[in-house]
Image (cartoon, rainbow, N blue to C red; front, side):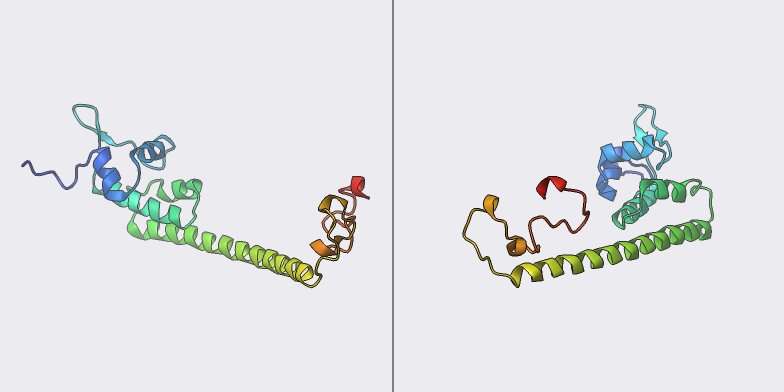
Length: 161
């Protein structure tokens, strides 16, 4: 059995090592997130341990929700950059992502409160009519004071008045 060089991988081997599909690896190369790989005498792509490490990092920060644009900025020039510089840039991307998550959590908390309030309004008013919904004029059974109510825009549905 021929021993494989630990710093020489085909795209299939790299995909298997990193859990990143070969098509995705090619896409990352096409958009510049990964540098063009070395080519063997047969013109097949050849990757090294640095490519493997880069893909592991890329996969990790994608999982955390960073955009490809942020990742591209982070990884541009990282082959020649000092570890401290890459770490500083990575920290900036992660800090930015944390701020975005905090903002999303605030919006979700407000939405949750609104949904909870709507649910409570529906639960508090048992249906008073057995008529088909299409003929129902009492909006209390669906959490509205009337079916004419639009809590988001007073003029949005003038056809319903």
